[in-house]
Image (cartoon, rainbow, N blue to C red; front, side):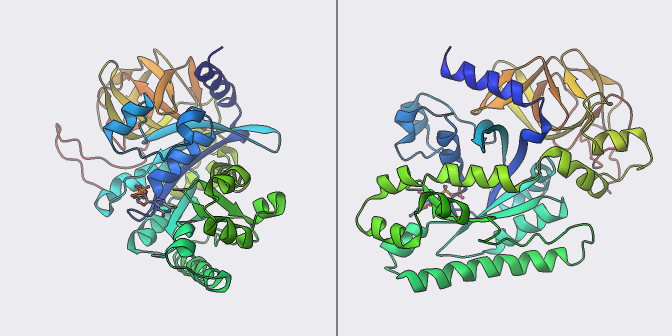
Length: 395
Ligand code: GDP
C-alpha cells in the first residue's frame, strides 16, 4: 500500500476517536516563523517524503512546490502523530497572518481547541502576538508557546548561556503577562499561563528543524549547553536528528492541548449564544456524533475540480453525503455533495465525518465563512451579513 493511502486510512480510523483528536492553530506575528514551523510538522508527520523533508521547505514560492512535486495548501492539514504508544489525529488550521484579517483569525480560532503561539526569540512578543493571544483566549482556546529562531541568538548575536536564558525567560514572562491580563476577566478559564516546567513552552529553530522542551531534554539529554555547542560547530543536522522539532512540538500538542471531549463542554457556552437548555446545546457539549448536525464554516476555498469547498468544525452529529442542511441566514436547505478531510493539504473524500473533527465538504452553495450549517434550525454561531440579501443587523 502506498504511503499516502496508509496515512489516509489512519486519519479515517482516528477521526472516530475524539479522545485522540487535537484541533490546533499556529498563530504568530508576521515573519516569526509560522510557515516554516508548519512545514516542519508536515515533514515530521510523514506528509512530505523524507527526501524533501531534509531540505529547507518554504511554502510560498511556486518553484519550491514544483521541485517537491506536491502542492501544499497550508490553510488546512491533518496529520497523524504517535505519542506514548497512541496515534493522534492532529488537524492544523492556518490563521491569516495579518491583523486586518481579524474576523478570519477569530473564525479559525473557533474551529480549534489549542493555539501554538510562535514568537521570534530576537524580536520577542509583538503587537500581533498580543492580538492572536486575545483572539485565542476569547474563544476559549488554550495557548502553548514556541520560541523560534533560537539559532540566531547563538550564531548571530553570539550570546552565551546566561544571556540566552535571560532573554528566553523574558519572552515567556512577557507572554504570560499578556495571558494573565486577558484572562483576569474570564471566570471560566483556569490558569492558562505557559511554563517550561509544565511542558507548555518549547524552544528551537524552525529553519534548522531542531527543538527542545523540558520533557524532550529529560528524554534525549539534549539541552541548552549541547545546543550551543552543536550550533557553534555547525552540527545542525545532528541536532535535528537528535532532537527533531516536529516531535517536540507534536508531543507538546498531544500532551497539553485538550481533545474535543475536554474542550467542547467548556467552549460551547462561551462561543454559542443559543438557549443552553436545548438538546442541541447538550449534544454540542458532549460531542455527540448521533446528535443533530452542527457544522461551523470557517473558510471557503475554490477547487478547480470540485468547486467551492467549505471547511469548518463539526461540533455535533455526523456529516454524510446527501444530507440536506440549513445554512444560517438563508432560506431553504443545501445538499452535501461530498464529505472529506484535508490530509497533507489535499482533500480526501470519506464516507462520514463525526463531531469533533475539521471537515471539508462540497455542496453548500449558500454558505460563506462564518455560516452555521445544521440539520435543524438553530441560533447561529454568529450573525452574518449576506451581501445578496437585505442586510441583517450584525450582533
Ligand atoms: P511567517 O510569516 O510567520 O509564516 O514566517 P516564515 O515561516 O515565512 O519565516 C519568516 C522568515 O524567517 C523566513 O525567511 C524564514 O526562513 C526565517 N525563519 C523561520 N524560522 C527561522 C529560524 O528558526 N531561524 C532563522 N534564522 N530564521 C528563520
